[in-house]
Length: 112
Image (tube, rainbow, N blue to C red; front, side, top):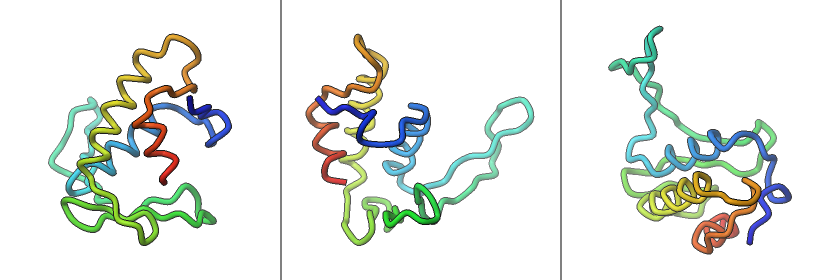
């Protein structure tokens, strides 16, 4: 079991799920919405992701299939699987929200 409360700054699950969703997407674009919450054709393209300006870890989009964490290559298809497992685990949590039990999710986050 991975005790996420000790591994990261907790924040909201929506932030973690959003990060995994962006990492697994082919183009790292986020559609803008209008004042009614409907998607428009406008978008924001994400160039790189950092937890803070001082963070030593940088996520960069390489192409449709891979992204980099610093200089280490990660396959987006693997992240998509992790996203789905993570999402299911968060939705089906029976104990505390921040105790992750899925071994694939745990191993992935330990590798990052």
